[in-house]
Length: 340
Image (cartoon, rainbow, N blue to C red; front, side, top):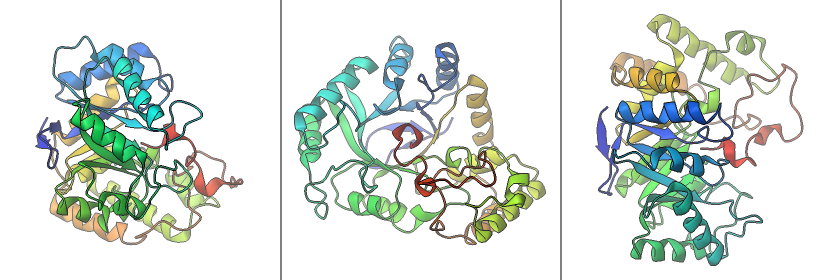
């Protein structure tokens, strides 16, 4: 497994990282999670990400990784704990970090992200949004000075609000989810260039679009459910044709596309099983995509350069064709477990 230095940090991370969303009660079970983590470490993955909002992921990862002697990098987040959560309460924020340390069985957190610092109406982190200042900044600086955390980060799902936050220069790492994948390129306009200017570490999340690019949905796309715009439908059909021409699985192509990005340092996968870990590692071991495929993908991605207004963040391909209930355009937006 190839490794890269995470921006201006001194952390060397594996090309693939392990997202802990399903290493929790949301996944298939403890034994499956144990097997997945052990396989990941055995195959060279050294970076694991979790969050208080991912059910009991911190606790499960702590139980699995705690006894392992192989050095691992761990990141977690601030946000959503305790309930009711008040992001302006410094005592709550510090208590959440202490709980993360206890659950993860760690003395130090390698990277502590501010979770959802960008999406409106999620968490009210900022007393001065323009200056990107709030009590969380004081807490992060204090914890860093005390050696409780090594580096600070932003973990979000927007393309312009998140870029404004990272331009503040207050953070070391950015985790951008849903905004950079084979078909979705919003992060290329601000997030990736601005992070590069500051030599920030860049973690790519949800490069399979939370399942939208995890398998093919040819019949559903052709049927065109109500939420699917004509341009997006055309884009997906062209994308599926490319997959056929290349003779490549959708997961392999999407993962190899992600590692082809020179401005990012590691790509999160969210495996449920050891087999999924092995499949992901097998894909990236083949290396970045060849230049001709990248050029063709760029052309297809440009067909829909920004999300259509009514398109859900998590593409509901498995919903009935006529499903378009209230709030559908923001499906998943209020559920932290579906984010990163």
